[in-house]
Image (tube, rainbow, N blue to C red; front, top):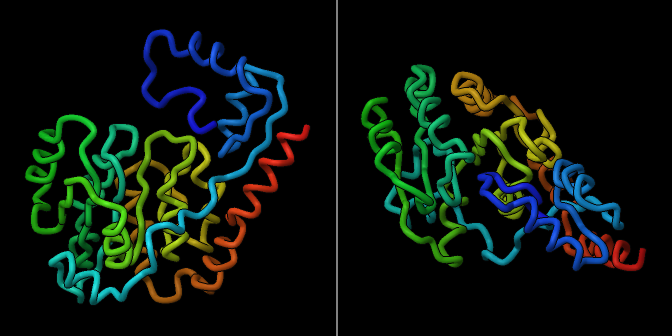
Length: 251
């Protein structure tokens, strides 16, 4: 179970969810929020187990190689927003963070890599109104799996400015490429990104997100960052996920 209660509710969701859940014998929830939501529908066996690391996108390449491939300047500071662009994912919040004078003074650039799920006009207007057209690099076409590594390899930091969430597969892609993250304190995002160890947890607010991004670029702001990421990444192995799945299936 990923989103037992959808991010964008529609009529009939509850009835259809109850109908579907009756056909299953046990459940594996990918965040504690989802596990809690699940309890509102069923008392059948269930267990919390985060999604494993996505390791099917190839190995990381150097920042120089990635930037060359994407047509970017390798000496810039890049943060990454990756994935489908939907309202709940908060790209608009991040675009407001990008107009923060501190972000501009630091020369930080934003890579947006993902397709628009709805109308792109409001985002394009926001970029123009915020005066950040030169600071935002848009790659909003379909991105095939064999291209994903270039976006993560070009970035210094992955930012998930979600206004609501259960969990996010982007976190596990970032762990695969061993990238630090800034995530908002919504849903299960903070469960898998220890604040001050593998990144920063903040509220879905432009100023607070900008502060967290700037903090990352401060020298020694995250002691033992690489070791922490490697250690945390090991918690999300496929072996662990399989063991949890088999365990709940036998219950």
